[in-house]
Length: 261
Ligand code: URA
Image 1: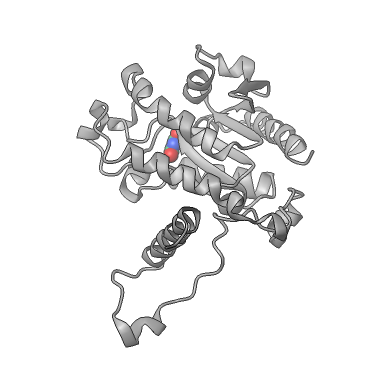
Image 2: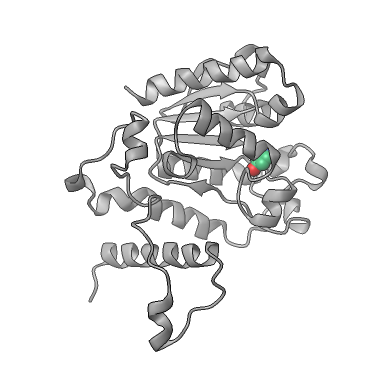
């Protein structure tokens, strides 16, 4: 009999490998003697808080190899459980028009989580958050502005997991239906810092209407985790002023300071 924790670990690794195969263009698993043709996957960064060069370069604290026990896998497993609980969600009307549920992506062991508003057309098509224009901007902020690696050092999700039609703001009933899953996601990861991108994310996490222009750059608390508020990258693209870019840069420097302590 395989112990429960090992079984969960093996299932998790198998799932990661299947996702890896899918992402690298494989549409089926060959039988028997063709198995050796499958690519080998490096130890999945999204499972272990590793001591990779990027992590060290970024100044973030790696976990010692002897700490990479089964315990280090718990956030990933917990996150999988949240995803399973969400299932083929029909809890609000967004399920009628979505193509895909966009749960989140990145490293479940990350110290930093970004929370956006909701998937757009590109995200709805690909099933991944922040892959369109705003996503490119966010990646630039993470990789050029903060010198972090998006996949390894962060986890990214949204307040609603399904695309609001025509990219309208998510409505209250939709946010209410999805919020328990956002909270469970954040508790599964327990990052050092959460960054709310824009007013809807900030207001959802703080449970009040947040004037983002006034409150960006300020620290808050969410379920015992530090919460920073900043502009949404789509707003930056719309209002591409030096002042706004500087503001986000300053906010992210404050985040880096906390990550490095
Ligand atoms: N905007 C968001 O808020 N989230 C996404 O995933 C993409 C664009």
